[in-house]
Image (cartoon, rainbow, N blue to C red; front, side, top):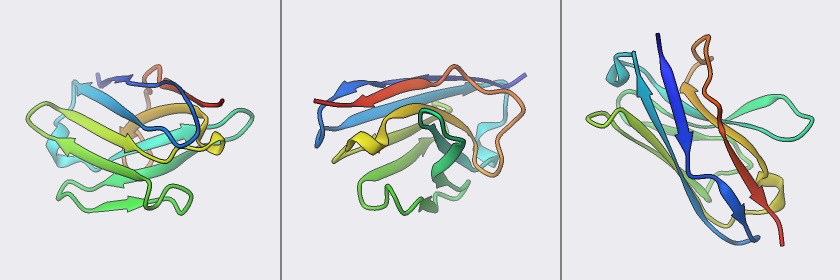
Length: 115
């Protein structure tokens, strides 16, 4: 059974940076695309960044140029470097398989951007 553990969130001021990490287990990590999903308060969960098994990245327009997704297959870990954060980036961030996600989700990590 796949397990996903996200970490690295917190409270940051506008313009600040955070680096999120997600460790996966119970899955053949290297063969899948991976994604970071964001659920803002009162909104549906959305995919904001995706990295293919070959390393190709794709971003939602709202984060393009500010966020960078990367993966380390040896560590079964996917990262999200977030720069120039703004209040609209506030939400719970989850990692999961990069197409539609596996059936189970981790607990996520809360990111709050506020003065």
